[in-house]
Image 1 (cartoon, rainbow, N blue to C red):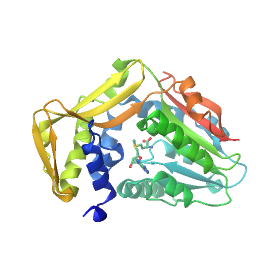
Image 2 (spheres, helix red, strand yellow):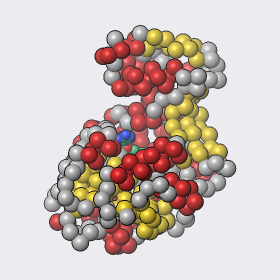
Image 3 (tube, protein in one colour):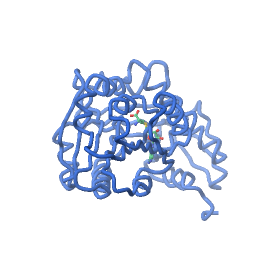
Length: 313
Ligand SMILES: C[S@@+](CC[C@H](N)C(=O)[O-])C[C@H]1O[C@@H](n2cnc3c(N)ncnc32)[C@H](O)[C@@H]1O
């Protein structure tokens, strides 16, 4: 049985078998999750999108000067999602100077993105990659220089050690002069951050619970979604937001595809997401053992969010 398990099944089994139960956040993004994430980005509480959008719309010329190359380049976007911010940069760059390569593990997100881009920019040279981040970069071996976009503070979904390793692995895939445009959410007070992970319309709650619905559907499980609640927490001193699913009673859940059951005590939590917040010393620390150097640090007017241009030296 073990041999035939999908990666999703193995990750669910491993995560729920730990003393402190976890589920990887990348499984949020199926068709329903993609749609909920777009709704979350539209909520007034989710300042991250508005802040980064302000940089992409009001500072476009500056961005273009910083990221454009004097010859044709590959613009690779990791975890591209719906590309609503990216499109402003793509429109401002000289059309024939780049190929756009959006990468996403969600084929649904990529299909929607591709349709939208082709409609808005019929001349855009676009090549989608429905792969994991690094598998996608490895399949993009051309002589062209690279600009890698990693927006929306997606790096913050990794613990610092993992983020460090990610940046060092990314740097190894790049050549001298290649660039990274990295969008990071900055440290700020809990009264701004916490509502972003607990919107009044309940989309974040649904997004978190969607993980259990997905396990029910894809792994034939019997999670009762009404017996789990969304629990966001923000530690202001550390600058770390965490999302949990909290069991509201003692219960047992059967996952048929895994052939096992998991027990949950009342109040026990499953950790589902981390959203790290950054400042300059932390970013310096994350890139210190890579060949990446900060070329520019652009923030929105409220200084909630930063888009950082890194160059490989
Ligand atoms: C939080 S959304 C951000 C979307 C977009 N970058 C933005 O700023 O709005 C993260 C996206 O990354 C994709 N994703 C998550 N983990 C991934 C991985 N390991 N490899 C490729 N794509 C991934 C998800 O499917 C989702 O579309």
